[in-house]
Image 1 (cartoon, rainbow over the protein chains, first blue to last red):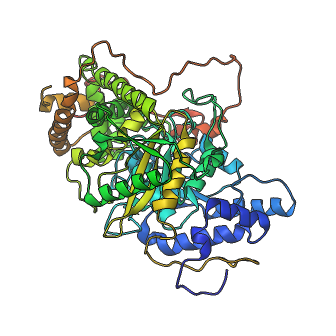
Image 2: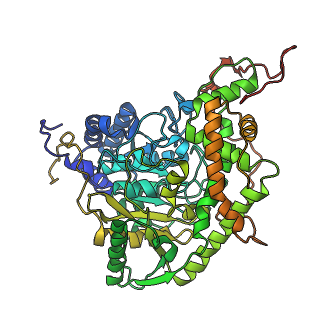
Image 3: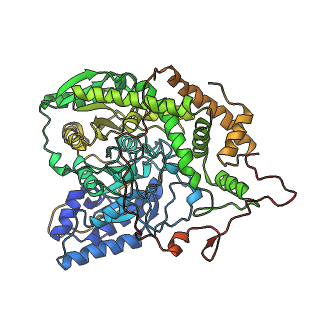
Length: 506
Length: 107
């Protein structure tokens, strides 16, 4: 490590994924130096930020040493060799505690890696730790974590979004090059928008859910949070593809996503669904107008259209997701893993374990899901919601006859303050623009498109046809270049100096 | 779609295997009622002849050969169990002892 100046973050803190991998491959810096810089920055900043639930310094150092060893021995390396990446704590990690933000899993050490974790390791990534999230990914602010709040690096009095709030905050603050999150109703895109980073939810089935702590199985999808669209393409490349262990994994060809970043949108038809432009903050509306204008300036064509069933997405989501959650979370019963509260008989042990282990929002959703799946209520609630899902999907199918992508705000407001959402329904409305994408199984991306007058990031959302992540990355790259944040990073604490760079600039 | 009675909330807690304290039951009754009121908007949607969507993308169940494949060693699979006796997981009795009513929860 270089001498102790503390004026600015080391250059490595905000290096891109590609740049980090390239510098390590070229011998400008070692993977060990990169990971030591990341660990030092986490140590310096994260006490205040609260993004990490666990830092795996030992595992990260070993993985980095392995990368350096392989390089010295001229062994071919993966595309992410030496890149520090952190994981939302709903992705199980062999030998590293996984909590899903819940007390009920406190102390559980999984005996295997999630598919996506194995893919990252195979690509050479260095896993630095596990990131905070709303308990079982249920929430929009990370306030539902049983462990700690996570602060928004742009304004510590505000939430980082959720449920992947640790994932967005860590990337925005330069604590890792990229992270993985999960998105069930917006849980990658909404925190990405709140923290000024790129967040992509792939097409349902594009990325294996094997080893992902399940919330709502027909909606959950894993995806990257990164500081650039190009980085999102690289990380998505590493995790996408068929996995026979997930029965909903799609056996479809995976394109080279980096090839999509042509910088070209000439002739691209960009749909503007009127229902997504009704209620939002003025700053958000102005940023979206600038984004649309920038696309037009570069040759894209705007198409005004309607997705008439949009207003039904929120109620449909809050039936489907809790119903599936109530079933998925039945496994937490104090028998095979996690915490147990002892009681003299079995049923009482189940109920007391779950009563003590789950937080308020999780209990609320389990109760709601149990209610709507009850005999006699199924048709009125769950089946009805699944039918409405079909209507929402048909809206999108029709829209994509007239356009290639849809452009919307990711959220109606920038990041809100802690405690600002007083009731569950108010909190649920934070996801009003992101839910439909999950219900329809489409890919979506949030790309930063400017700051509010108060200096808070704003996200533009692009939604695409099934399996057409490439077009989202292409258009997202153009938005990033035209109206993105450039080199602007959160003002936050400076952190430690970066590693020495051998024979190169910062 | 009616608001929930306190008794319904207690019944759901039993079905959900959740022990809830009285004040939690009160709060749940109020909040679930508000959420159900919000989702009642769905009732107005015309879904005549609309099929229910179970998955976003058409999916066929895949078959695989019925052959044994590598899996977790027993010791690793059991390592997370809260109470064990060798290769067995220990749980409380599921049969009520004489003189004790059937197991209950949420009450």
